Length: 366
Ligand code: HEM
Image (cartoon, rainbow, N blue to C red; front, side):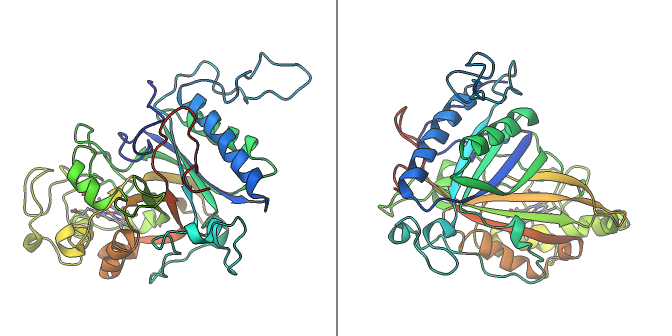
């Protein structure tokens, strides 16, 4: 139930031990005025700083203010602990330049070369209304109400400046980001996150996750890719166990790689079916590594008697081109593709952490 420090070299919510719940939100900026946007980002930072400490979003509070004014906090987190809340902000490519090339905020020359729209991938069925966004906030907490409260209050504070474009709830983290966390299971029933990049591998993080040496506002930051991946649960559930294990490349019980006995035994690529997910995603085949931080979702059912369920995949990398894009291209022949469908996509530049109490989200950019 404790608080995670909001300030630091890197933003919290990336290598922070993955919390149990997610509320991810993408916003579009509705004003064209740069100063208004900056003021809102400063107000967001203040509110985020307070909420990650377990306090109300505003200094007056949900129930102690003027009776004739709307409260500066919505109240549903009164009495709840910080629950490990982290709020991680990212800037989308459209903030710098719209799809038709308009530089709305004078930021075009600050757009990192790495921050471009993702290429198309075979088999995806992206829905534009739940993809992209000028800004995103990843809210993670061990209590769903705490994460939802945080997103709701940011949306409230942003009224007139930003509008919610889409949002996604997630449960049951599908990754471990530290070695002392036990590996959770995803909705296919498999342990997920065994071979993830982890907080206790600083050299690998410096190489694959953190931006460094660019001399730009992104040094110390990271790029986030989001993909809502629908799982065709009913199809999967009819496959026999052997086939499921051959699809993933690991055994369902222990999570050991096929051909090995323990979960953390090294992957022997020669023993895995060559088109299994792990074989194709493994660094020795994909040539790179990413930090995965996804969550399961069940958004009810689809009206055709099937669960609208899957994995809201989130990953962090120092460059999307040599991170997600490279791995996803290598998954072209993945046996798992029969059972999944990507329906939403986003790419965001997440700046470094805040240096102190006066620093704010976007200070290096604007
Ligand atoms: C590993 C499931 C999508 C990249 C794994 C593992 C499972 C899994 C069970 C093995 C345990 C582990 O090492 O974490 C899934 C499911 C997905 C999905 C159910 C979609 C619904 C993706 C996507 C990417 C990806 C879209 C990247 C483009 C990886 C990587 C590994 C991995 C890099 C580690 C491979 C290794 O080093 O051995 N995934 N995954 N996965 N997955 Fe996925």
